[in-house]
Image (cartoon, rainbow, N blue to C red; front, side):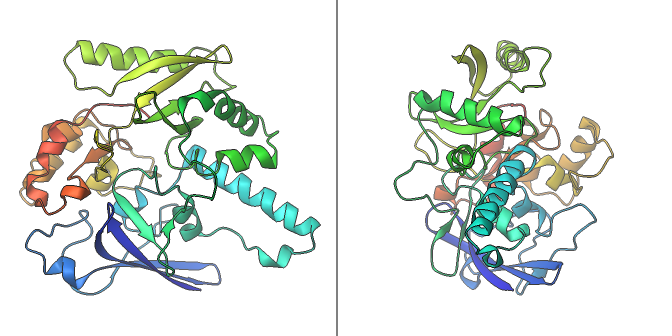
Length: 337
């Protein structure tokens, strides 16, 4: 199976093409910059492993790593989101089996997971458009992928059902899109706050022995009081449980998307690697001679764990050179996963 997927920044700016090939159980992927992007005076590299050059650039997959280049893999689902996508796929296969159509379904591959993330709430600025010109994952007719805050109770109930391994097909259908765009192991979803801002709803886990969500909001509150530009956060009670509501920092006030790469991507390591990397590692990276100005902004990195995002230019402003993107980095709010 071969697929060709357009890669865009924001609503209108195509920067290249992602080519995916599946032969048996072997997967490979390559990214190729578009000629118009390479010829644009305001072009910039999309990540440390994607230099501006003509032709396809292949990524060598490590044992447990992604088949995609790290900057693209940063938008893949992991942890909780991957769990929801997999469970939903299993339920659908069961339904097809009962209908005698099991042969129509195949195990999920890396591209399936990448494109299963909701387009509206996908983290960062990358958007993926399929061969039919449809952005993936497309919104299903008649349903919102980022529900208003009033639906928080429904989201919490469906998420706890998945955690307890007692979810129904309806629970998974409800979470599809709503609970697939965010990384990390703990249950969470995308939600629209009362003021219309895209936010993260982080739920208590059924395995929690303490109020983890309250602790997270407390940490962010203390960070702001200490002068750190931390993400806005508050506790919302839902079904008598404390839900942490945290403002998404990869969106501007006008809804424009903010591109980012993770600290793991900047360090050139896989998030599955067991080695630990300290703030000293990140400081060395920031001051490396071969780094552009955008990679040096201290506001981006020193507050971030390996999986934390590092913003770069807003795609709707993408004609701004990458070297100037440190202005986005300096304003990055600290957050937690």
